[in-house]
Length: 280
Image 1 (cartoon, helix red, strand yellow):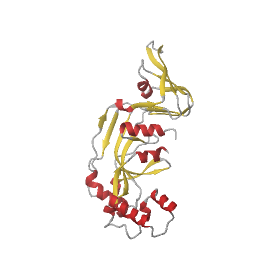
Image 2 (cartoon, rainbow, N blue to C red; image 1 turned 120 degrees about the vertical axis):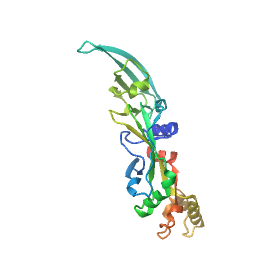
Image 3 (cartoon, rainbow, N blue to C red; image 1 turned 30 degrees about the horizontal axis):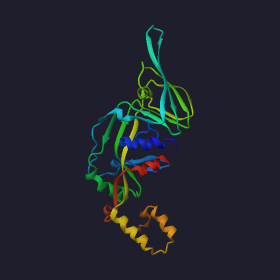
Image 4 (tube, rainbow, N blue to C red; image 1 turned 135 degrees about the vertical axis):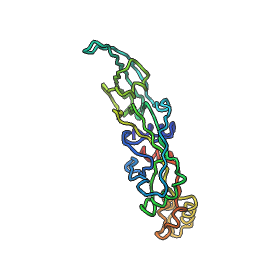
């Protein structure tokens, strides 16, 4: 997947993961699953009728400088020109050319950036576990969105091949390549070897943090011990395959219930492993 480097770099540089497509909205508390390489919101934990209300922070402004980055791309041409409109006013526009040395090279820029965070996860965690796995739903794989970031005046360009080129025009009197790329007036003039060019066009771009449902450490150790004791006489290759599969598959129907579910599951922050699954 050509976006793989963008996803990985975005997570490593900012701690946030992009939605796909970027303009697809989501909310704090959304319950998602990874389907066909995309995080798909299925419901919000508010819909699970929790005992306590979900607490979400007010918008927090972040430094937009942290949201201008790229790999294997450079601005090879930039020129500001002036034109006269019908009223005789002089207006500036700047042309720039971006070129990429590798497939998967990219450039991303965003303007105003603000985040909202779930602030009482510890208080509602056990109730969320019960409602999602036993009382209202039967999730065994789920992500709960714990933070949502919205960015305005954003753009992303991804190269499909070595030597890819993108020619842009922006209604500004100069500026660096990131300012020009993310500005709302930027328009593509022509391209060669570009896989994707995605712009805000008045819509916010969305990024998120999430917590993942998984087996608790105690239950993982329990099922790992059962597997290694090998009562089913599995061949070594089969045991090796089981170690790469969810050990939750070893659970018997009478082992997971209202009494055991809190100790059965745990939650962990979304990690690079999940980013790799998303990036493909």
